Image (cartoon, rainbow, N blue to C red; front, side, top):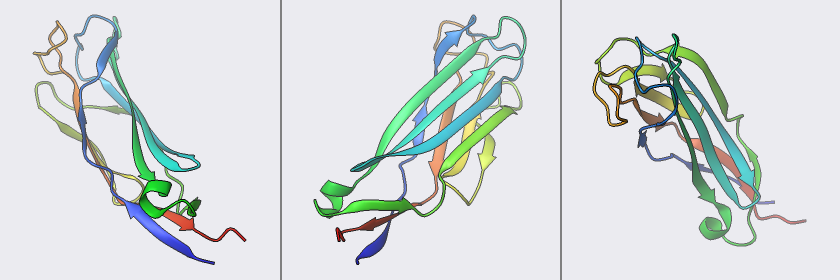
Length: 156
């Protein structure tokens, strides 16, 4: 039986969320939340993530960003006889409310790890000058660690 370990490092993600509630102006540093998970759709593994920036005072301005990235297409990368056996570890990360420090400080590190799928998250919250018609312009940069999969071509 041929079982192999394959890996992929997702590309850096850089993005800006969309306004989902409120007036676009954070009144002080917002809470930042993030959730990341992998999904195996038989032939392709996808990375999903959901990010939010939420004001902690009325009017509760909120920005959100959802994204899906195809990470590994086993049929096109290895051939039609290959299939996923398992991920080498659980890849699911839920980051509860983390306050983004400072106002007008640019990107601030809100998460850093050498383990799991996410290496680092740098986010900006209260910025006093944005593109959404109000004063704030939240944005994010995410770097990823190497993600491992077990694959096989044995169908016996």
